[in-house]
Length: 523
Ligand SMILES: [Zn+2]
Image 1: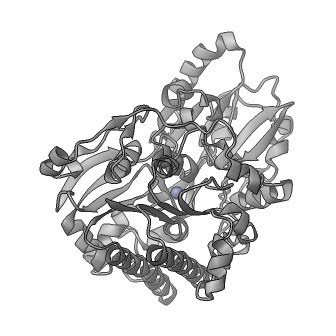
Image 2: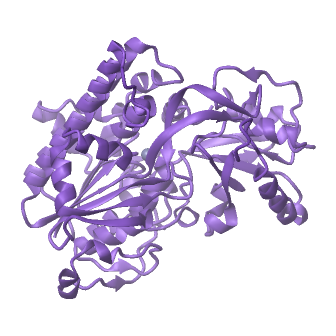
Image 3: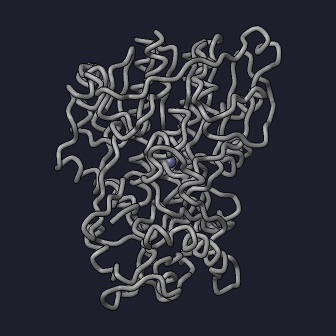
């Protein structure tokens, strides 16, 4: 059955239901009526690289190895950041498996598809600057062919660092509308690419991600969530609200057109990698660890006054810590992680004690700041477990920790800031899917089984999710039973396509790291 996955990075029902209720997304409303929906629980660390990779591989981070945008290697008292690429994913993607089994596949703007793999079909990666798009796409002639059409602004498919950088910390009011508009234009280029490929070279499995949902919500979540949207907006606020709605109206138009292009004999799935909410405070974990007598700086640290969360020079940050005495520290906001620095024989006891102490970390209002502490060996068990920090924290407002020194351990934000919520969305409609049905919550690992069943393939035995039977009519499953197959092929030997395309050179890595800084995740 022809199958399409529309990935909406960071989509949440809080926003979508509100917009549907206001009549802004008629195609999505129709989709609700004719399909099944549920909240979708993201990966233990609910961020883009880990979540999309788990969705694509049906495996948890301990197996695929992609914890975060960067992998932090600690050596010689320094922290080295390695930007994760497709080569750091140690499990086979569902589209590679489907391609191997003779299905035609199209994968657009998905995280972690560069350098590309040889496919029966085509891929253009997400998170790659435009000047690398050609060599990062499959087949190599795809980008030149799209350019030749003359109808698609192909350069927009790349990530535009200058644009993203503007979203750094606080953007001046006059930059908001052009910035949102640039994301609208970028999505249009992706949609035109998708439309062209759906018409000229239709696939059995088509996957496209629109990541502007995440970008727009990081900036403007408080104008999208009905609980925080101002009742009497200023002229500027009203313009921002309207421009965000234009963004979502466009998404709705694209959804309608995709369904039209697929025709009747098809299934459409919509999934997000995580949801969204707003962060209202900055949590200075290293300051708290210092107060607990677990972290010591060599010299007095400057106190952050800008609600910042990351350090300027990650590589040198460890050098500022007195590692002789420091027993626990945080390095990057995106990982929400604490590293433990004690001799092996003390580790288990120290870890338990730290988990207990984190439970006593209280905000000035008396509330518990850390609502969940995930031990690496419990949540990320597998050969790549060491890519996660020793402890991964969930904060009460779901924000990212600050690794800077703070005036207090918890400081309220002057304005709420969009952040990831662990619950995203999963929707399905089409042949055999139950109509107007709602499930409580599914796991992001359940999506790969759903997609593979839809294209008529057995679900690999090592997949960790559960097939969501409730999404289908019982009669459908009786006629088209769910099959369990053998193991996937781990990408052991280098893929000839990846070899031919080459690795990112140092300059490219630097550009991608800049991108992460621009998103406020690292350095
Ligand atoms: Zn995301």
